[in-house]
Amino acid sequence: MANILRNDIGTALSLTTANAIASGAYATSADKLTIDNTTNKALLVDFELQFTFGTAPVAGSVQLIAVDYGVIGTATTPPAPSATLLGRVEGTFSPQFAASNTTTAVVLTLNSVSLKRKTDYYLYNNATGQAIPVGAVLKAQCWSPGT
Image 1 (cartoon, helix red, strand yellow):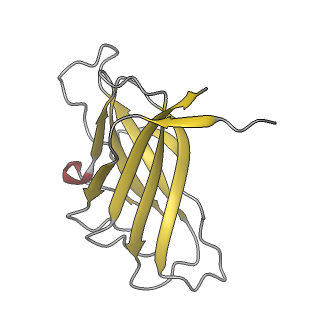
Image 2 (cartoon, one colour):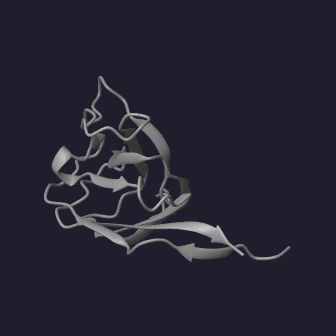
């Protein structure tokens, strides 16, 4: 099977969180990453998340939540996800945490997420039992398959 060639589109985006994300909580609106794909028209995006927990989590995961703007990429900012207004789960970062985990410094990835016209991306700390600290770095690289 041939490898799919990858054409990066635009420069990598980066966001450093200004707020901690408690276990079972979403990132705040201040810590969302917005990807406006109305000009670049990439098909996919890869995400990387780096941070250090205070204590190694032994359960749970970190998920990427998406909230789309209008179908034509309208300027109206959509509401942030919350316990009563859920966003779309784009996927779970890998690796996930197991009972035997002793690692605190992590680099998590989520690859080949389909892009829409314009979307706000939020982190969700899904039952890790530990807060994701201030200063976590979320990076995104948009891309399309090439020939």
